[in-house]
Image (cartoon, rainbow, N blue to C red; front, side, top):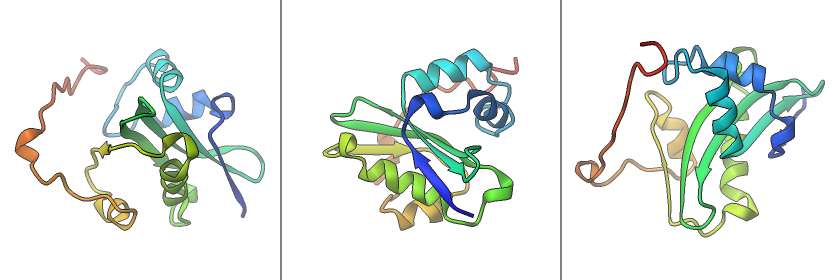
Length: 140
């Protein structure tokens, strides 16, 4: 099967993205309007199959000058194992509008090996990193 990468916001299939994210461990119960606002304020990559159906998504929160935070990366289960997440991330990292960023950041529970292959490294001084995290915000 052939796949196509797109950075066009108008192509992102909000219903599919919301359906996946509302069940993902990092965003259980996230409301559709929150996903819509998040996409509107981000630089997004979508992976589409030959029939134009979205099968993957990645969202980058960035000022396009100095910093980017990678979030909400997923590939639908039926399409995993074909390098689609890697293609989306490589597409974002190589995009002309995202060159010269000083720092890229992400959080992942279990995909460190994938990101390591793409040049990501553990934070050298995690004691410098802080967060405000409302874990059950969407389910409380």
